[in-house]
Amino acid sequence: MQLPSNFIKDASKLLPRIRFSRATLPVLTHVLASLDATGITLVVTDLDRWLETRTLIPAGPDTPESFLIPSDAMKAIGRADKNTEVRITCRGPRKHRELRMLMVCGGIAVESCHPTIDVSEFPEHPVVDGTETIISARTLESLAIVAGCASKDVTRYVLNGVHFNPEDAGRVIATDGRVLACAPAVVPNTAFILPSGTVDVLTHPGFSGIDVQVRIWNVDEGEWISIRGGNHHLVSKLIEGNFPNYRQAIPAYTPELVTFSPDHRTTAIKWLRSLPDKQSAVHLSW
Image 1 (cartoon, rainbow, N blue to C red):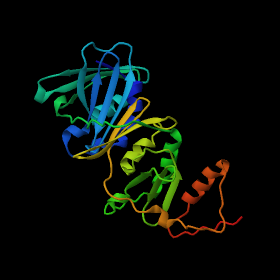
Image 2 (cartoon, rainbow, N blue to C red):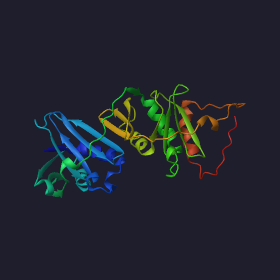
Image 3 (tube, rainbow, N blue to C red):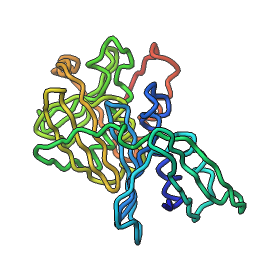
Image 4 (spheres, helix red, strand yellow):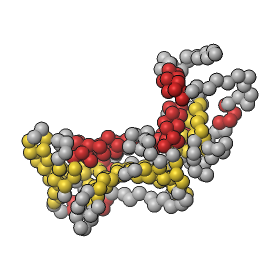
């Protein structure tokens, strides 16, 4: 089986957004590679999130093939020269399988062997059904802006993510109890809380600048969300609980308001983020 080195290099920038290489279960430290007649799919998971990326190839195997790539083997493939092919052979009995890889590094042919696990041990992601909603690229931009205000305190679990609220024509909200960010956005009709780890995946350039298809599904094991954008697919568990009433933190009446134009908004946000500590105060005058 042959994998394009360019595809592996691009995937190695996206897939680590789910920290699979630090998993305690051995099978979760592997990347599931599936090849068929139309393309190649790579999948990683931490059991709360499944992330897959796909590329089309002219002619794959007639019979679908799947194998697991250890994290150290992924790093080795990432060192292959650009625009080259990595040839992988999976051999050995089910309990003692290994990957034999042939690639070109610095113009020199390199061979390496890596022990792997039987592909049947890799967990399947939940099937997410339900009504599909299109979320615009602008919403993902707003998501990246407010995400910095989400709490990192594990004891405040419900605040460890971004709240999607369909009220008031749609909002994305994040807070840590001290600061709060709220931005208008096109969101599904169902309110939910997207975990910060999932938000980190969606802020990758592979998801930016494109509209995504979203499905939300409630099953006995919890509430799940499916997000498809371009050649990527993300399935994630949602945070269960009631998000605080963000309206209570916003004054109902203010005598004066200031609006930053689009040309100055990015600069203003960068300036506010550059403040030295949480005790800093800002006074705006106009």
